[in-house]
Amino acid sequence: MQWNIPGTVIPVELSQDPHIEERIRGMFLAGGMMLGQVAAVTGLELYTVQNWVKRGFLPAPVNKRYSLEQLCRIISINMLKDVLVMEDICGLLQYINGDLDDDSDDLIDDSQLYFLFIRLAENHARTRTPFDSDIYLDALLTEYQEPVPGAKQRVAKVLRIMLTAWAAAQLKQKSQLLLNEIREN
Image 1 (tube, rainbow, N blue to C red):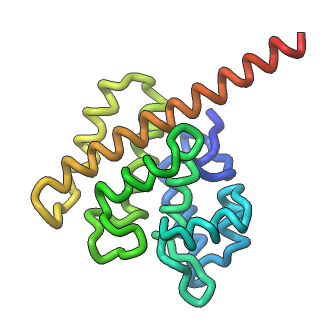
Image 2 (cartoon, rainbow, N blue to C red):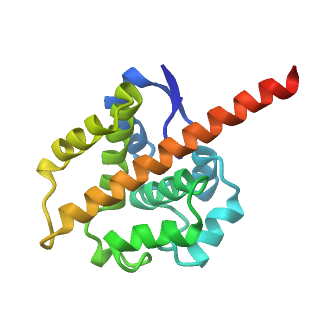
């Protein structure tokens, strides 16, 4: 089954899931990504990413290079923006990471959150059952080390919301395709 890595324009076979994290991490072997590269990966306009930095949705790049964590935050926002309004996305991220342009208060690193989400989304795409997703999510979080008590529950809630929003976006896209078919006939 072919799909795009959530939040990106990168196509991948669903059976290649274990390699998605490696593929994204490999983009940082040169020490970061330039704005044009971030835009190419996400399909976003350059000014959109710059605006998100200006509005404090993520820290500013260092020496004009975006880190893996920043890219994962951008990808997560991009993935969620089709279903959730920006204020809700920021609220969701603040729920687990406090001040969005300060990494020191994070309950989970943005890349760790995104890669956990990728595994959860891949499982959901295969099974299409919400109950399996909850069981799988619990298994995914067994190795997560809580920096403060209750952090694991917060991260699990955010991942459930991300999965639900992503699945809703998939359904929205599918219904638009079906509507287009009707229009063409």
